[in-house]
Length: 68
Image 1: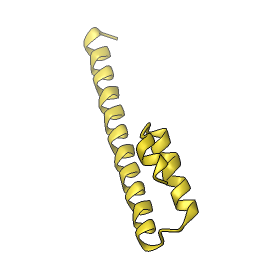
Image 2: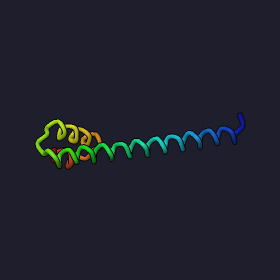
Image 3: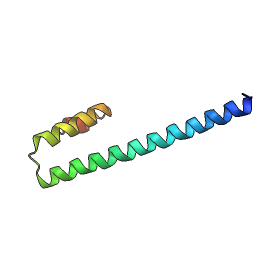
């Protein structure tokens, strides 16, 4: 395999990873928005509050996590 082929494979892999990360981040944002909408409708749903608290804790957003 030539250096050019290796560089092309690395570029392609990097693009694939970037695309995958973007799609996951979009899915996460959509999921959070859906959970927030549930709380607008029923603010006392403890399971939804717990889910958001876990998500925000995993995202290292303790201020948002403690709101739930």
